[in-house]
Length: 321
Image (cartoon, rainbow, N blue to C red; front, side):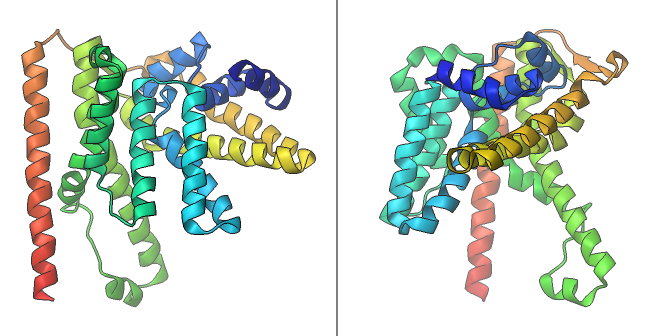
């Protein structure tokens, strides 16, 4: 199926570099050494791993269209079937199993009318994966996938609270009373704060892991991870839309896929054309396994304590109301 898909891709995505990226994003097969080098140069290797980002985007697309024609529970059931088929198509690597298990848990919870917690979902995915393949615990991809995802879930809120000291929050009533220019400025400020909080949470895990395994970390990663994954998500979304139209109205589908090809080629040029003189890198001497374990235990325990206290604060606010 992958070979047939790749042959079809050659007929609709004309740019070679764009085709390599889209093939990798949809099947997990990154065969281009040039593309691998360009992404690793800017600390964007995580884009090469099919993960919750890909499954969530596909689930969003499926949810939008299935709910146009089917009742809610039936559309969720069809989503489970289609996402599982996609999981079987792309294969069973650590990040893929984590992403598939987590999103299936969320969808099943919706069917039975229960609330799903992200930490519980990733915990179940962890147990499922080590039962399925215990040797995956030795995989770098396994560690990056679970530790960075756990960092997002546990550290995003404390990072956002920390940044709130520098980005002033305003209530809706205060926003309505200000000028249009101030409203736009507040929206941009809020978006910047959220993006920086996410970036900080990710890199609190990614930087120590990169230094431990590779002994270096590219500083441009801090900049490119702010915007490049968003650009790539737009490329993948264009491809999904174009492929769907190609099945129904081939002429429109071909036009959208050509647009996707040119757009993807453009965003990849942002990586290729930057001079090597900008490749600033942090390097460090190897440190012990005990140090990296102690770091993550301290980091995640702190995140758990903050989550518990934040939950108590919310409950107290609700009781006061």
